[in-house]
Length: 118
Image 1 (cartoon, rainbow, N blue to C red):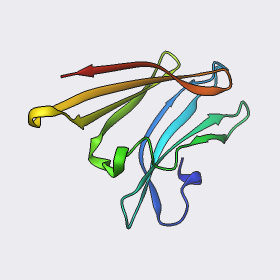
Image 2 (image 1 turned 180 degrees about the vertical axis):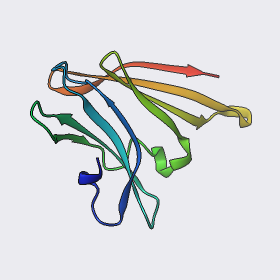
Image 3 (image 1 turned 135 degrees about the horizontal axis):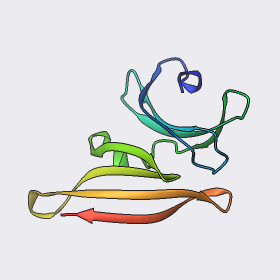
Image 4 (image 1 turned 90 degrees about the horizontal axis):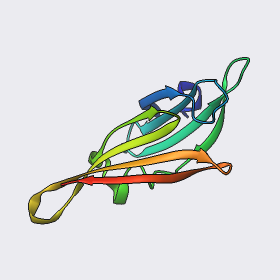
């Protein structure tokens, strides 16, 4: 993942696992800007011989909803799906524990699940 980080950015969070069912580990990672703290989610598919190919990049819209970088809790790869957990502001000063699950299908990542714990 470090190879994908431009100057002035570092890897904030990384997970490994097979996301495209080719039996090769892929990586999902979050890059963070050293100055602004902005974050970008990126996903790279592993190649059979070695190395990675960048598959997706979000431009910071998903991993920091409305600029709220504190909302992100963690992400994981489980059973070929990418799981994200956020603590988002809710009503009456309570936070909502939101989980989003994406799977690579139809040549793109699609939302296949969402759960909110109050």
